[in-house]
Image (cartoon, rainbow, N blue to C red):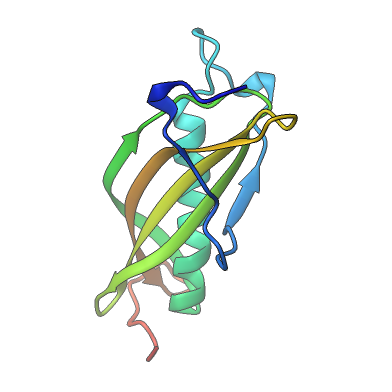
Length: 136
């Protein structure tokens, strides 16, 4: 399969490991036959929270979805990789960028960026109260 002009082929980031890698299944489809956007949002939130939790060294909660852009549809059989990066920290918060890439057609692999998002998490203690981030 060759990429259509809208797919904008790319490469997986060299030297970076994804926070999460998953393959959507038929139950994850919307009525149009593409993977439901809410499924992608959920996986992006999980991937972002993994990195935020590492930085906070505690439980975190999602406080804001700052931006979410869907660039391409995702299909059953795509291998979807979620790459994360901390872009800022506050006293109690961690903001994470999530880049979502799909690997398509294993016989003639094509990688496309399908989604990008920015989410903010807040570190909380065992009672769910905000807590300061530890030194980096």
